[in-house]
Image (cartoon, rainbow, N blue to C red):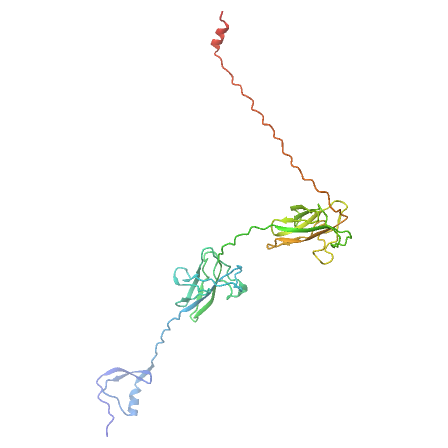
Length: 360
């Protein structure tokens, strides 16, 4: 039978090995073998100290962070992404460090105005947007506090064109709320020369005084009609009705105006706005602070003529006296007086003159 006897220990040494994931260290003699029986092996192992083996945790490679998202044309300049406001293509967008001393990445917006930049690691950054000539940034952080609808670029100051500092934590992999509102330069539309507006139309004798153009009621000739501003402080145009009672005054531009009709003593105006038909009623105030004037009316920029301004007169003749043209006297030219001649004194040689007087 084989005996379980260890070989001779030559010298004590530090000995270590791994048992079930533990580091074993002990002071033992260097042997050529270890006991094979469990009891003998246990006696040997009791001489050792066991330490757990710590495995180092591997360092995670930082995940790049995607930053974006949108550059849009803020047509109304209110700092909010409104319906119908499009993205702007081809705008250069850059990623800088927070000190604005290192350019980290750059890109341009897509056809729809979106963009994406990649930050290599967590940290502090800024987004910069480069404007095209004539464009300018809209106000920052509006849109009623909705960070997905506002602009994040400083429009002026030391950080003009940059965002404020953006801090990206280690657990962030994407940020898509960094937008830029710009007002894109647009070539001004040529200004159309305003077209004068014709305003009329009819002054009639309201024989029954009901304020309505009835059959048999005829126009009044030579009635004076004027066009005033709404405040009644500026006269623009004066005209007289023709023999049929028709008239036209001309407004130089769109705007707010009043019609005025000048009548002599004894003639009055019909009641205003009677019968519900604006083509058959009278539009002049018969009393009050606007006596003789229409109410103020507005002429829009697309209007070239309005012909519903009629005037009913009570006790008016078929025609007022035709006004005589005002003669402008040519001023008489005042003759320019001729300059008075200046006499030049003659200096005589006194010696010669005296000799001539004493000559025998």
